[in-house]
Length: 162
Image 1: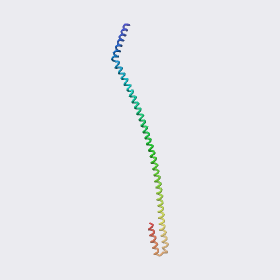
Image 2: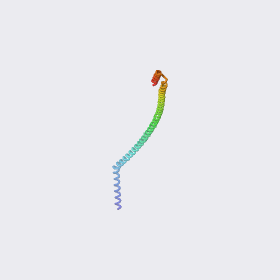
Image 3: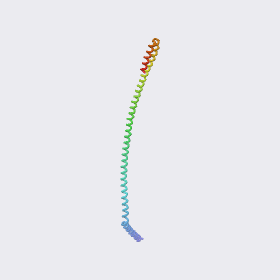
Image 4: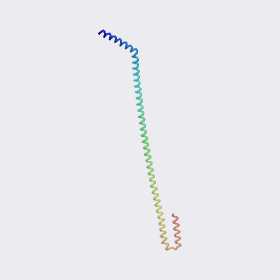
């Protein structure tokens, strides 16, 4: 058995050597080339992924800047609009106060005018009434000719006032 074991060992060794030679001549290079290509492809993929990650990070940063600028601009627009609204409110209130003051002044003038007209009308009515009373009192003491002249004079004065 020992001889058989030695022969088997020898032939196993020879077969292994031939196998290593054949693999070294024809198999190892394609396998190693395939592995090298695969390693290079993985390295390229990792480098591409890192570049894309950097690009995505840069885009995110730029988008954050754009968003921040947009927020600041929107805040500025809102602030400006509030200031304009306050100015418009103040102008409207000022105009309303002036208009209210003008309305009150016009009402005072109308009241004064109405009062003056009423007093003038009252004076005219008092004059007519006084004239009527005086003519009744005088009628008894005046002759018809004097009475007619007095009436004509009173009527002409009355027509000039109206």
